[in-house]
View (cartoon, rainbow, N blue to C red):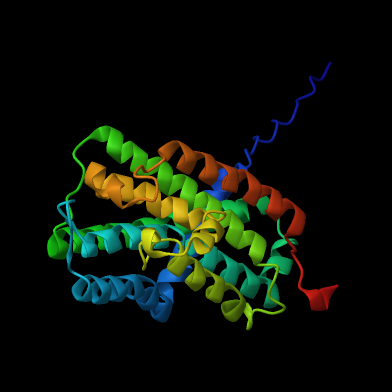
Length: 279
């Protein structure tokens, strides 16, 4: 009597999540962690609001021959600054993650390294977008800012915002390796960001800055981000406030795109997963 051999059923194939999916999960986790830190949330969102209210209320003069006022100029500049907060937040946050051993522990998990950065970048994109929405709301409600009505203008806003956030975030990741410890990260990274704001047209119009300061600011993305946002929210009338009487959107795209590529190269060559004390 023959016996028929039975085969055990094949185990189900478990599909592993992709690096992008894990990055999205990491972004959700980073966002939850951020909103649990109430002090950080209050400071992050209130600081640009306070600056806008102070500068916008003090300097409310009309800009002769443009139909605009100085307050609206500050709205566009602070939107650029909000889009670059990733430089400061990522630079300080990653330095602290390195110092407290978070990065070292991540190396021992199955999480792809790229997913960590995807999560960080998306979290930064979300926070910057929230800041921009708040600043625009205040600008429209209190300072007479006119939102653009053309789709093409909003598309300009999108590519300036995305390229600006990506470029500044990559730069923040790269400079996170400069502080010797997490405690010194704020001092090392926050100061250059403040200086860039003053020389990039956030607080002082570029036409009132010395040429040598404008040349320094032109190397970094913030000056071009502010210029791109002025083109969106100040329109043709605001072009007369530019050094060349033009927003030079082609150059804005070129410089911001170069910073995305250059920032990525800087990250690949300078980023450290371990602190100096770990060897």
